[in-house]
Length: 243
Image (cartoon, rainbow, N blue to C red; front, top):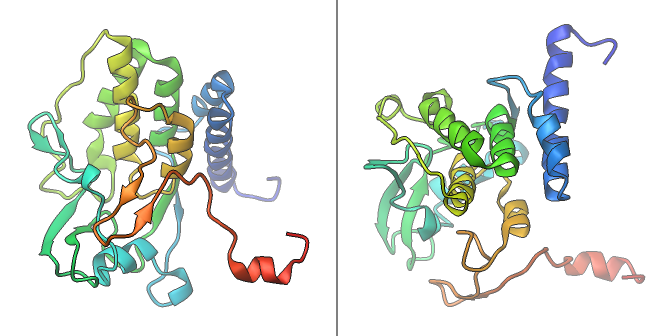
């Protein structure tokens, strides 16, 4: 970092701290994750920069879900509230039944990203705080949950008419309830930011987490199951006889 400006060096340091904290959390090194996460500067955000003018850099979430309507939002994210108000961290629009590309699904579009050039957060102070909450638990976690709720207006996708909604304060002394709420806050805060699969793998406790791997048949009659990785494409196997 020797040739970088002071601001650039700070940016990359924060980004590295979030990434290492995430890795340590997934490895079960809670103390290491907290040590890194506590050093992340308040308000820090690193963005994957998209570009509406270059198809290879489009925001694919907007392209697939909102523009082309090839996919819809999972029912687990529909109608979520904090207290008595709709959770502004998950802005959705109900388009209607059978109006998407497949003519079958009940179509909901996401509005966290509202154009092809919308940037996607991939390392943030808010995620770092949630990692601390997950490890530390107790009243420190309760305080972090409420601090993030109180500053929800800091999120760029929260609409101005929602930013001032009085989000309910979370209060509990029950360890299991606090643990479950930390996971739920993480699910909502980091929605559509690329952390879900890692979270499922780390937090997959049947009957406890909200994101257990599902099995069954979707609305299109397609089977799905508890896969923990993506299968290699045929082209990769065909070109490599050692696989």
